[in-house]
Length: 98
Image (tube, rainbow, N blue to C red):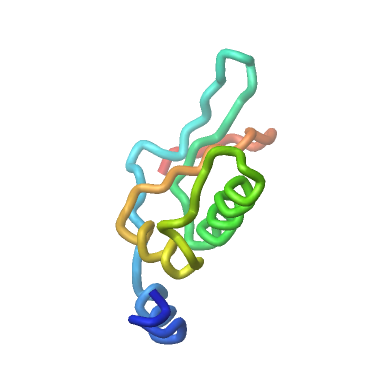
């Protein structure tokens, strides 16, 4: 990716992109185990953390691969027009539908 589009040029493009959002999120769900989770559309701030998570589990052999995402910018490019959902353990705050 960086060979085709240098990082500084890609960042200009990426800054103008609005990530798709799932219209019925955020929502709070209770899993069968009783764990309460919040599901929401990912933000641009989430994308580097998600990439690091995928890279970490790939590096430790836990069944994920990042070979199609060799860099963070490649991952950003692939997710810039995709629905990406984050699931987090719920805290005590209420989730508000937007």
